[in-house]
Image 1 (cartoon, rainbow, N blue to C red):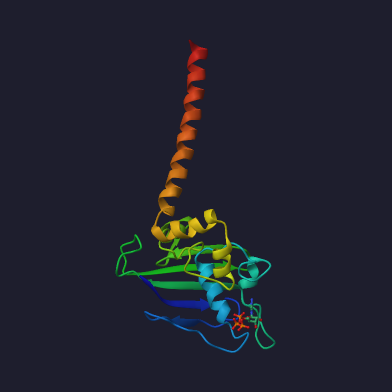
Image 2 (image 1 turned 60 degrees about the vertical axis):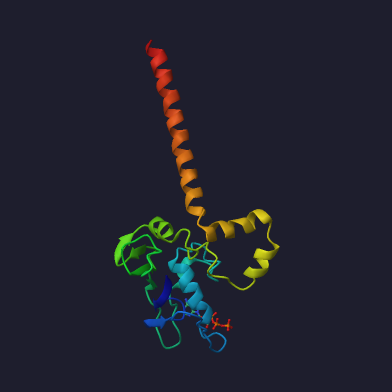
Amino acid sequence: MYLKSIEIKGFKSFADKVEVEFTKGITAIVGPNGSGKSNICDAIRWVLGEQSAKTLRGSKMEDVIFSGTENRRPLNFAEVSLIIDNSDNILPIEYNEVKITRRLYRSGESEYLINNTACRLKDIYELLMDTGIGVDGYSIIGQGKVEEILSSKPEDRRLVFEEATGITKFKNRKIEAERKLENTRQNLTRINDIISELE
Ligand code: ATP
């Protein structure tokens, strides 16, 4: 599995549709200051479901939509797609190529799609869980992140290893199962109360 390409339209400084292709191995993006290198990383984070405008270096989510220049009017929506090669079937979906898309309109309306079919953000989280490329994964190491990982508490550092070894999915399922168990327990108590009232 690897990131084959990214399509960006209306996101931050990318008013026109831009496609950046990545090959296997190392890809370096170079360019003058302010030319949009970090905006590409922001775009990747954003599709993966980043909900914090601050992490994307803005103050509100709308800031990711192209805000116009002297010669160009602002756009009304931003759209980014990640195209992931899945020929090794690491992603639990029966497609050799997976396209994950996020769209945001100025009205605040937003959409997520997997292979052009609308889905919930939760579906994207679940698809990418334990692959390391989710929004909380370790595949995007921002400036200062290495230092943060090294200086963090052992328990926090452990989360990075749990994601890398594929444990996160099972931990989340355990939490969900425990919640259902607790609900069932409460229902049983209620039923027992009703039964004893009737007796
Ligand atoms: P550096 O090398 O200095 O880190 P960079 O190549 O990483 O720079 P970015 O930070 O990705 O550059 O891009 C910054 C540019 O993106 C700025 O010129 C800023 O005006 C522009 N920009 C950010 N958000 C928007 C937006 N919503 N609409 C239009 N342009 C935007």
